[in-house]
Image: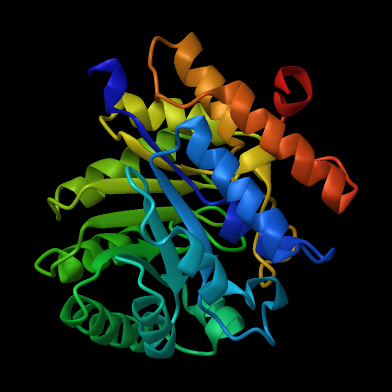
Length: 295
């Protein structure tokens, strides 16, 4: 694997900011996203197009998209969970949309009050709608490694979903460890299972709830995965999953990859400066390690 082949997508402006109770002004978000662009992040998930009553931090999604939709050399995307969200992302001028569905029946009921089967049907409709609008689509599967306990999402269900969506016109296929239940061995099993069913590039969205995020990334790299979601300072979680902490910290991942002989093309110190600024704004420490050392 060439050192330049690993791609990081910064999801802090969406996955991280949505989890904070302290309001983050649009200008503060703008500065953070601009800092990430200057640090060299090639992809940034800048917002989610969800109902502001459920996720107030994302009420300015259109305004943020307007500022960054045409950024040269960077792919800026938005998360959509229904067709209305797809329409909003398209109308905002974004060229890429990220979709996400449940794979665990209980999580589907708790999070969106719908079955996995209904989520699959709606995802198919959203993919068609986004493609008709000319948008590139990443489809994500939630709680792939479990919801309440390891393995309570059946690997056979993940295989079946990968096979179902394999013929569809997707840019990439994302697998999320939403509750941080994965370990290096289960990472390898899932990747091998999914890769046998689809040729879509695999993206991993790993939460660090139990401290195995970086170990899981390195295990995935050994399996040939080269695309990961990370979050500045380790921000994030899910408002609808009790106890879920953030993604693996962007600067920590850069450091771990560099120490292992890889490079992302992203400046860890520049990321750490953004993480420090956001930590100061929300007035609490973030879960990442290196932002306190590198900023």
